[in-house]
Image (cartoon, rainbow, N blue to C red; front, side, top):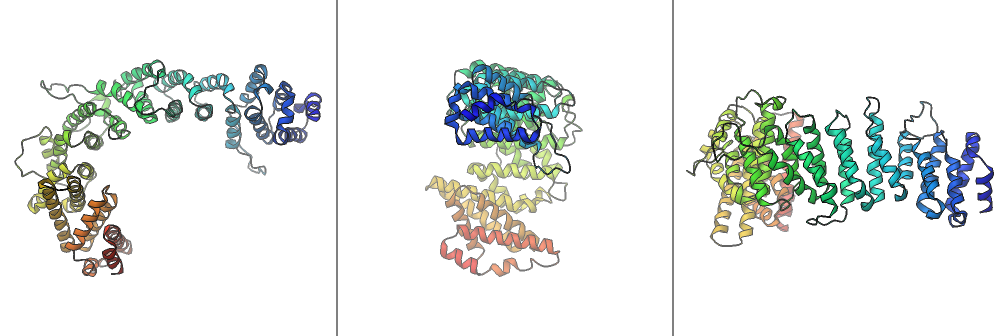
Amino acid sequence: VHIARTMFKEVHTPSHTQLVRKMALDTTHTFLDEWREEVSQLGPTLGEGINAAIEEERDPRNLIASFAIARQLLEDCPASCVNEETLVALFESITSYFPITFSPPKDDKVGITGPDLRRGLMQALSATDRLAEHVLPFLLDQTKDIDSDSEDSVKQALEMLSFCFERYGPKVTQGFLKDLLDTTRDQVCRTNTTCEAEFSDTVRQGLRVALKGVPAGLHPHWLSKDLLPAVKILAEDASKGQTSLACRGSRRLLLAMADAHGILLEIVWSAVVPLLLTAPAGSSEGTAPALPKDALSFVLELSQLAKKGSLAQKQLKQALAGALEALCGILPGDTAAGQADEADLTVSELLEAAVKLVAQLSQLAGETDSADAFRALRLAIVPYSDGSPAGRGDAWGNAWRAELSEDAKLSESAATIVTAVCDVASVQPGRAAELAPALLDPAASASSSSWMPAALPRLLATASLSLARGADQAKEGEEASKLTETAASLVARAAALLQERSPSGRAEVFSAFATALDGSASAPASAWAASRLASELKLPAELPGLVQGLSANSSLAVVNLRAFAARCFVRALSTHLPAAEALALRLR
């Protein structure tokens, strides 16, 4: 203690050479490591001495040590060792090094990098929440520096804000949310910042910390005061369309907020989606409001954050109707998006976003409310023959089926629609049952398009597994029997495809069923489908016949892909078959 007191009193560390300064800092580090309790008896003298030792340091070797000493002092020593005056002095000493611009020279032998110094600075600034009232306003102020040469400074400030929020904890972070949101909104929505992503990440992190430990469904009192006004302003900006400077930034910030916590997803959805739903120009009375085409990708990203049950059924039904209405407005032959604020989007990009959104919302809304949307999607790839009443999307589906049927191969647009149909059918047995008749009718599938043979294995695998899951859930009775019978017919159709196709065609069926079996959420359904398929194919006895010809007339790369598909198929079957049957198949 005497040595420490004397050193802090008699040695003016900054006035010495680098080597002597390093020795003094190392000695201080040893005091805090080995004799922390003893030197803490110095009280405020300890804090004052350390602050005097580290100020005005510029050598990177000594800076690393200085940041570590400051962290130890603030984190490990009693608060009495750092009075308020010294705390402010330490804050000013530490922040004088911001931003860190150090880059080691080419012939550097020390090994200290800019990220090392930034990490040390962050750890020192976040060592105690006593610093929060000084550090957080300082960092927020640094993010307002939007000069063209200050991008790195802004990014460093945002990174340190996120780090400090985590270290300071929920209570401190809650107190600075309003300032964070106000600053972020000004920078992202009112300027052309290049740090949009970093601002969004900081908002997400701040909200996650502030809501840490808050269960879903519980709305803390401070949300109404600090958060809801900001959400309302952002939602209004987000609904203005891409011609508004604030629109893009607002949408990005709303996505970050919704991603932070389930509570915020519901708040953001309730605020912005109703504002986006507008009646199409020239529409008749009773037509559902449509989502703007330029907002489809935004609502898709928002919906992808939702889990089953996290949004009210009324909200999902309303959004699905708006998405379907928007989908019906995207037709083949359109030269552009149709509005000035959508001119940067091609028809294929709009189609992809709309199809994915309709599929996502259909899954969230459930079987009860997804019938019209699914009908439109499946009609775009296979015609109907069941005589059911026309739906809102029939004209759209017929138009796109006619357009896509001209493609010789499975185009990106067609693949997007096939994926959407499979995604919905895989989780809704009722939708799979509606798809099954067209898949079982060779004439219907053959008349669809020249690329349908490439998509058919995936559709068959998805529908059969979904129906098997539905039958397992129904347990017994007429419904279960009907679902099982249809699933068995689909498996038989797939088995027939395997036996009649060329080697490349068989590889497609192998891959489709391997993926479907591995991806099924129902073990009983997978076991039933694997057993049924093995029986239809007479496995393991007929396995050599199925793989015969895989190496014919192709490059080594193609042969490897075919062989890989066959191995995946056998592995997937073996995983779900009874042990004895699985062993026999693997041996064969």
